[in-house]
Image 1 (tube, rainbow, N blue to C red):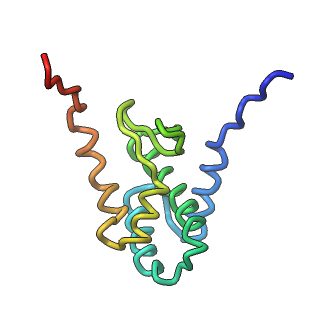
Image 2 (image 1 turned 45 degrees about the vertical axis):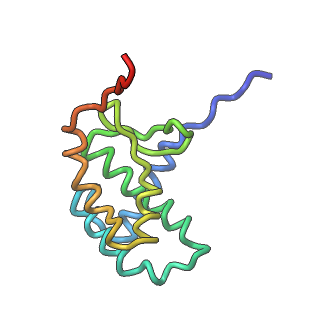
Image 3 (image 1 turned 90 degrees about the vertical axis):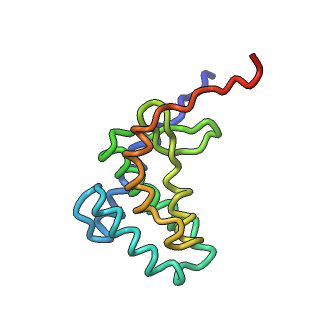
Length: 135
């Protein structure tokens, strides 16, 4: 029996992002939406039970990831470690679920809005070359 190809997870990620957008009344998948989500996370982070944190990070991470896709031309992809995230410019990979989880844990010190605003600088930075310590 031939191996079945793995189902494409992108439609489910996009649907989850849309559900978050609608539930939180966010107008679009853009920087303003990320800023509103950031404020919502800050306001609600003390109310999220430890057992619910992974699900919240998953849902909000879908929204953040979709914003990265739409605003910065990224694409949903699998990272080198097999995690799901967003690839940008064929050289950067961000895990939006981890980023949301960090804000839930650390508050404004790990702001997703600050991260989102930093992406253009990251895209403009030259790719890190391999250092040759021994020639």
